Amino acid sequence: MTLPDLFDLSFVGRRLEPALEWDRLYTFGEIDDRASRMARLLADRGLSFGDRLCVFLPNCIEFIDIYLAATRLGIIFVPINVLYRDREIRHILSDAEPTVLITSSDLLPHIPADAPVLLLEDIRRTVNHYPATRRVAVTDGETPAAIVYTSGTTGASKGAVLTHNNFLANALNVVTCWQINAADRLLLTLPLFHVHGLGNGIHAWLVSGCLLRLTERFAHDQAAAWMQAFSPTVFFGVPTMYVRMLEWPAAVARPIGERMRLFVSGSAPLPAQVLQDFHALYGHIILERYGLSETLMNLSNPLYGERRPGSVGLPFPGVVVENRNPAGEIAADGEIGELFLRGPNLFAGYWRKPHLFSAGSWFQTGDIAVRSADGYYTLQGRRSDLIISGGFNIYPREIEEFLAEQSGVEEVAVTGVPDPRRGEVPVAYLVGAFDTAALAEACRANLASFKIPRAFVPVEKLPRTALGKVQKHLLPKWEPTA
Image 1: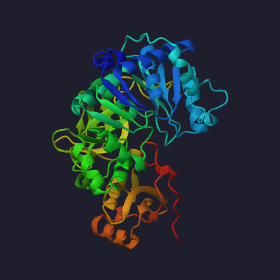
Image 2: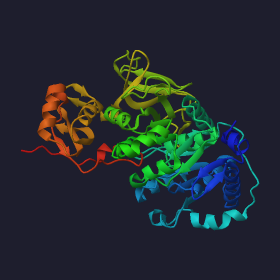
Image 3: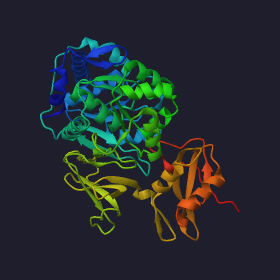
């Protein structure tokens, strides 16, 4: 079975039922026909099985059309973050070597002049000239469906090759474990160029047959109105969205919470304080889960059962997790380890870099975690974020969680800076109106001395990726005062 086969649960089984709200309401049959016309157009433009197709677009209905057409023709879909610029785009184009790059005229200035561009405006003018007869060339689930480039925060981004089977396994887990069904209404504001929006949002919609409301992006000043008008029952978000939603008054938040069935958070750690404050305001405990570009979803707090603050929950069906200590042995419950993964969700390898990962191997995530006695995993941060100060290991998330609970602190990131005597020391970067002296005193009373930040640096905002991950390497350099 391949993605087109699974999507027929909706395209064939629910053909006349409402599917998508964009500029108007579309049925599943109309979305199916749009994908068929797009597949004919792409084939007419020279794209065939195994070719790479780059897409540099914000969320729009054509983004979905292009993706569905690619899954039918065996074209490898390569989404590009719309926030990327010259250097990042050139790297992806050089590595993926696409046959075509689809973008819009307003984004064209960011594209290299020699790129094989097909403009969205040209597609819109011509696509309806093609017949809506279906053409499917993919019969093997191991066929690559997409190459998703990692964020590249520590070097050049790598292209994770995700197969039809990877996406199938992930979609079935998400729909089953979170019980997403045709009666649900999904508000999707996440970018489709990322696996969170594409692999979870679009796939869950098409497999479950729920009604989707797609927006170009999450706009804080409009999102409340969208929720009031659409009355979603499911919302996929990232922590920064939930932080902004805490700013809405109770008179707005409470009715939204009453109509909602499930709030899900991922792509970055959700501070425990945000989960608690959100519960108080909306009456919901956000379901936090853990995924990666290379693996899609791995773990999730349960739909029914304890959603533990700070934890990413339990492994999804079929996903095997080992938490290994530095010696490569399974870490005891309660001890720090690094997550290793196996399962049907695991990618086929990095594009043109087979030496970095072999299909069927354990995937070393670089994420540090602790497993509880009852099987819940709690992330402690990235292995690369570990601060070693005077021989002591410091995991920044512990300090970040504590500081996030303090008065006036809206957001916080802790990173290590060089120190001539201790090797490294922690420094905290904070957003908000806080009292530095009070923060220092609270840390002295609650944290080991070597964990106390050497400085509390106020910043207007934290540098983040489009999905809300803090880019610590872009924080301003801190220099100790004389």
